[in-house]
View 1 (cartoon, rainbow, N blue to C red):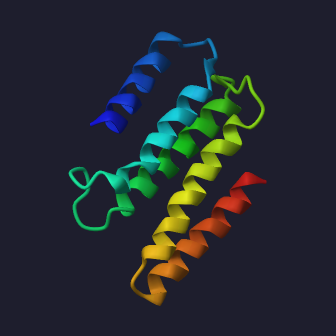
View 2 (spheres, rainbow, N blue to C red):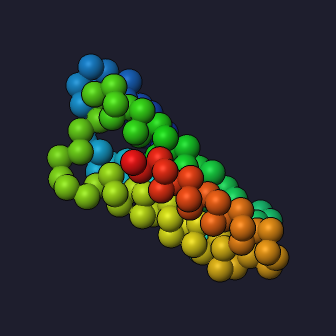
View 3 (cartoon, rainbow, N blue to C red):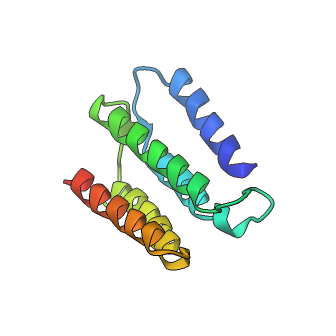
Amino acid sequence: LPHLKAQRLLKELEVQQAGRPIDGSLYSDTSWAYTQIPHWSSIHKGDKYTFATKSSNNLLKHTMHQYSQGSINFSSVGIASKMYNNLFSLYSQMAKNSRNLKGKEASMKKCLELLDDME
């Protein structure tokens, strides 16, 4: 599965590059791969957005933590924002495709939490 392989390769790169910053665009590209999961029916079982949003959110939190530690460098403007946009896109799709009000409300709550996290 390409998204899992990409994440595993990032972990290996982190070990190899210990003490040296890694280009943040690699993390951004991996977050994009998570936005594609809902389109791959062979990957998800049941709710196609749950795995994608949880994995993308975990990657984003990990990336921002590594950035705060100086282990990741965002060399171009907008790379970190792109990761947030990818996750917003997943939450938006999740709300749009939710069959009940509770699911829509949960997605909107996650979006608001993500906005708070961006500050």
